[in-house]
Amino acid sequence: MQPSESAVPATLIVFVVSSMLAMGVSLAMQQIIAPLRDGKLVASALFGSFVVLGTGQRDIAAALVVAGQDLDDPKVVGMVVVVAIVGLCPAAVG
Image (cartoon, rainbow, N blue to C red; front, side, top):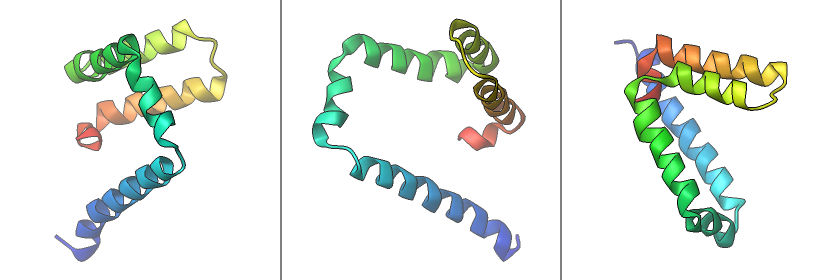
């Protein structure tokens, strides 16, 4: 393994963590806790995260999101790209 190949995962982790920290610092504690009090929202997020996306049904989930909402063309293309990346490279999501 060349040094540049080993630097990519480390750089990716630094980018993800710094982006999450930047987003978290800009929020007040009340803004973080308020959505967690909605049980239906938390349950649907967990269901979507672990059941739908965890079983490999990403393309169906993306199609339902696109069909269920009036999205602009760039957002539809973005959804297709995200689903394609996850389908082609499962290592991209863990």
